[in-house]
Length: 491
Image (cartoon, rainbow, N blue to C red; front, side, top):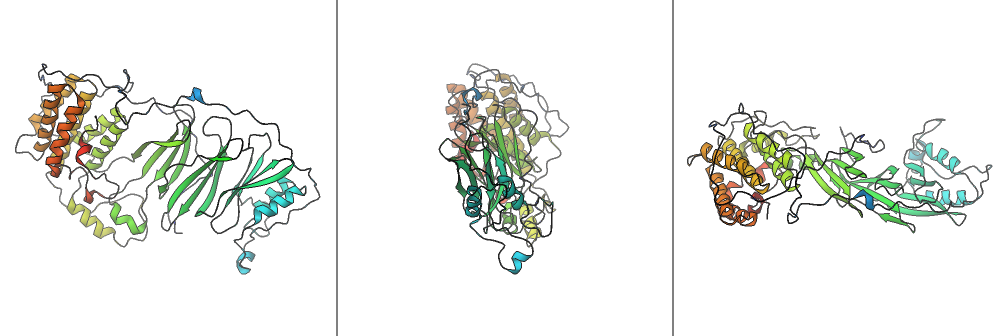
């Protein structure tokens, strides 16, 4: 498995010292009524990076979100966590200090010469040794010598943990064996004997991560990571927790291709969040990903499992990426962040252009590249003069519908009037004015976001060409492929 230039440290999971910021979810309230008239205050007429973006809504929400919005998920209440009561201390076999462990471990380079670097059955040998009275400390000392020859203090073997994961006040041995990809076992005491439980069986390349309490119930969880495939691989995080009878599976529902970092940090709900950063393409798929960015997915405890609560890419480099990031944050209910991205689409002079031609030229430049670069550098070319007015007009339209949803009547009116003024009928951005007009008139008529969104979606369905600049095949594999329903999520 090639992982050239790939930096990954699972054994040193980072723990953030402070909790995540408060939820950025202001709520909806009734928008402008049919009797209200436009009173624009934004008198600027030029689309320029020198313009000052509009003042943003404060981060702190003041009203309760509408329960009808399908993307809203109530925060997990840490008060519902039931702290597990430790069981009576487990009784283990009486130790015989004279016993010396002799179970097999791979010793370099002898194991290569004897074709014995990888084998199974170590867990049974350790179990038999412990049940005869051997000590855990001597087992760990021998495991640490794995992979080394004539080394008295290497401490090279790290795929083990000696922690109470069964909640019986007796530490247990969690370790990875020496089979091809690696299997994960737990040895624990029960009825004065050591029992062995296999958790993971040769599923790709296995690494034991840590044993720590993630969900606040006072029982350490077992974390392990497996990877599959060539290049940068597909990674899957496994989480197991003792439930009194066995090890319950709390595994993440999704993996991460090309994992670059795994981080554990405090969440706003008082438990732990898991952050996976990656989505780095392998050499074989790099051209399809142009232009690519690192993606961070956050998994949050919901009382039963870890579910994906948020995903975001690193800072956008291209204007269309800022559009997509804004739309994605809107779906997550991060409205202040979404507004900032929409403002950047219109006003930032740091965002670069993208086009069919640039995609094709970059494809040619990067084809045959041996190693995936950490950050993508686009090919040169001539910008498409229609891209900016289309994306800027769409950003204004999205701010109109977002202000309307939030009940910010005056701000919605200002944005609508500004959109009409800056993008006249001969502008490439004018179709988005027409879509905004359909939305605005429908809302003025019924006062319902459902009806207003239906009008905008109907316009997009009748004019699918307006979706192409937002995200299509030439925007890369990470891009959203826009559909008519994507232009208005409030329904």
